[in-house]
Image 1 (spheres, rainbow, N blue to C red):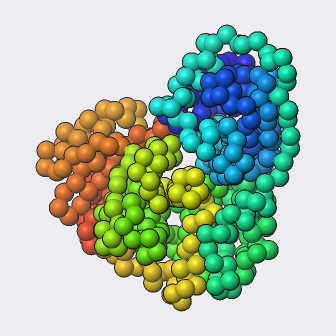
Image 2 (image 1 turned 120 degrees about the horizontal axis):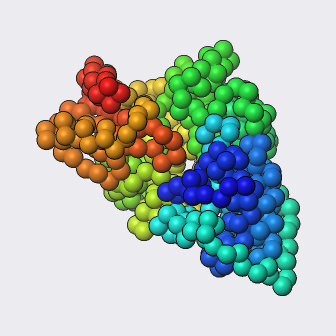
Amino acid sequence: MMVTTDAFGAYDIRGIYPQTINEEIAYRIGRFFPSLFAAKKVVVGNDIRLSGPTLKESLIKGLAESGCDVLDIGQCGTEMIYFATSHLRLDGGVMITASHNPKEYNGMKFVRQEARPISGDTGLRDLEKLVVDGELPNSAESVGKVETVDITKEYVKHILSYVDVSKLKPLKVVVNAGNGAAGPILDVMERYLPFEMVKVHHQPNGKFPNGVPNPLLPENREATAKAVRESGADVGVAWDGDFDRCFLFDEKGDFIEGYYMVGFLAQAFLEKYPGEKIIYDPRLTWNTVELVEENGGIPVVSKSGHAFIKEKMREINAIYGGEMSAHHYFRDFSYCDSGMIPWLLVLELLSNTGKSLSVLMKERMELYPCSGEINSKVKDADEVLRRIEAEYGPQGNVTKIDGLSVEFDTWRFNLRKSNTEPVIRLNVETRQDETLMREKTTELLMKIRG
């Protein structure tokens, strides 16, 4: 099997199986990971992708031969690896997942002690070099112990601690697992919650019979929206494949952009903990910054991506961080992202206020209309970025924390390359001007794709 650097990215490994991610790479990662990160005991798990079990088997073989003890938690969501690493005080964790990528992909995310992320700046480049070019070390005199454990009950108990379950109302909730890993966890959570769950695409299936589990794609939203409308549900929730992101739909079946959820959750935290720091990403910003400042918080911008957000959160001890891509991070969850905590917080707010989600969101969406993230395949992303900056930069305020952001008095945009796919991503927002937002989005897309 080929061992190349092709699947190693900025903050994880992700590639097409078996060409750029395969059992040999997984085994070699297992052989080098313990010594590189001083790991004597690690947790491993996999999402629902068909190549997951064999990749995990090879990874475990490599870890054990290096003398590292392994806890295998089986099929799970990425955040369960974060939870297990921190909760069980392990030396590290490896999640086998490609998140929302098409079914032919797989990959790995890594953490060290305290669920601290391992990214390009904190060891991933060193691991890459060893895996591709390093000489395998001698096997350990004592082979590591491998155990299969179930942390579901402890994990669910922790997730439910973020809300007062006794005050939740018996709301009707559409839950769409996207045939990913969320379904079995929702079944356990259901026992402790007063909600009536309407289940859509609930069974895990690595063949993705109902499309790639990525609710950010407009074509993947209708199943949830339709179920909300037909069932008369109070809210809809959809997850990606490894459920580290959740997406909300209001009682009309309308999709709530992740951008507005960041401001919504920031406001909720600041009402309880005023003066705290809130992390946001540079793609869409005005709504979040305004809400944080109005509620006595301190907004702090960070480069997009889970590893970068987590590092910044630890650095400044932020209570909450959010990305418009629907990643939400919590200080009390080892500064990690969770796709299960946000929707519970939202339903707690619905229960407390008695207001519908559409009413709670309408004002902010009208104040700061946004395009949502729009992907474009281009031959040369760097050339596109240079061309757009040359045209728009001189008239606006340019920042390059993550891609290209250009801000004007009444509108702004961010254009950035994907870390995981051959596309360039556009986000546009305006101040109370839906028409201008649509005009500028169309204008930019013509220039990007032209």
